[in-house]
Image (cartoon, rainbow, N blue to C red; front, side, top):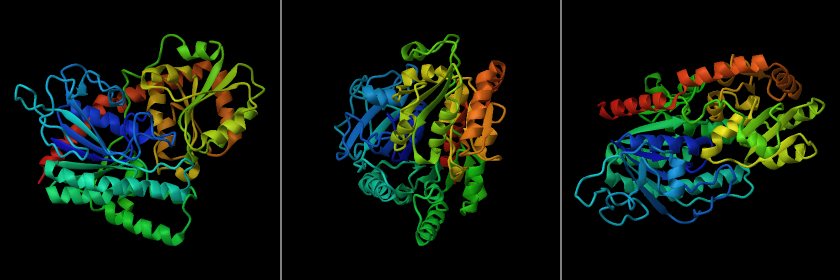
Length: 462
């Protein structure tokens, strides 16, 4: 099947939507599909374009299927030489003709004349990335990608994809995707990872009542135009119906985790020795994007309150607009350590550094997003302390696998961390439950195999 994916974020981004979309595209290509991705150069969560990529140029990367086991696209794109999918120039054959940056070439052939099945093409489009993102700058950032990627999407009409899949964020991609699908007769699919517009207003990033009404109308009009709309939690699925999507068009498609790559280690993580942390110390870890919707200041307040407790260490790993604020608030605490985002090869060691995972989220963001980082936390077999209102999807996912406290309540968060730090048996019990949940509900092959079946059925339906 020919699948066209349109989204702002993609591999080799290590977090969020970029990681999710990269893994999905790689998996589908290695499954035998022809996949094209129209995206931007990697910039998240640092808000600066990664070395080796340009914010102003169009570019193209081609990979073809190999018989060896699959490797993650985030590694593949970074090196251009991995088993499973490899750059076409390194494979047994070459592209039939030199491609241009908009993906005009439509077939790949080996030197023996055989058509190659199972391939991935990544089409990078220019994007403006502000150094200090504000509400207005974020909108301009999204518009810049939508405009730059519009002609590239329309060029894919000649390729004739069977499914056009849009990843939200961002909704600015919707017009190009719907037009492309309509002109080539493809089915249209929207996958919602984040209700970006709702979150913007709920978190106070956007405040105009008139703008809220206009955006709400446009969003309802656009999401109801798709043949299929999926999202990552049951609560978010209900919100789609409220926005006018027919229940028959809705699909629950959760985030996943590679439970073979992320698993509990039988020995202490190598990070303990590297950071000078004793095996007897208890580590509370936050790892991931640092943005406003997390309410990161509560972590600093809780860490301050627990300063008198011996053998408790905090480790913060990540980047994003909220990093400098959190670093300033914790700079005077000797038991708080910082490390940069880690490559996928070290992700399991990083997650196993934790005795307790920390997952803050603002109350205003409840059920507008579902943190993708939760899947790795659970797979590592460690308990999670989350800040979320009762009854939310996040609270339901963590209950029995960690502790849930009121958002913004640093004292409650500190007490939950202290409770787990003092009770190793409770930590082990909740960690076992977390690992079992990851294996039974979130396992990557199971989730993506179901997506594969849905795509095939969806494309074949009249």
